[in-house]
Image (tube, rainbow, N blue to C red):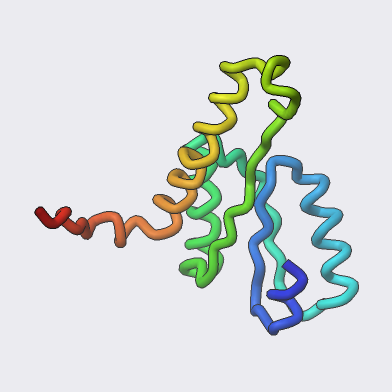
Length: 120
């Protein structure tokens, strides 16, 4: 994120579940890049309504997002295979593409209205 600020981004929307950590990031970035507008938004990307609220704020404030970096994710099921809870491992694995879909869908709903038929 500092790379975007250093490159001269007008504004950056910071997204995470923990608003306190977002505020700490805002304070840190503001010290080095005071001209960059930062919008911290507490969002749970596993919740489609939360993601929709995020992009509603983005649209209201900026009209759209030019760049989307979605690096959210968790993976707690790290252990020797014999010790890993199989359902927990699977749930975490499935959660990542599903949550990425929620974010992508809300970021650009117009692209989803155009579909490409598979060639036969």
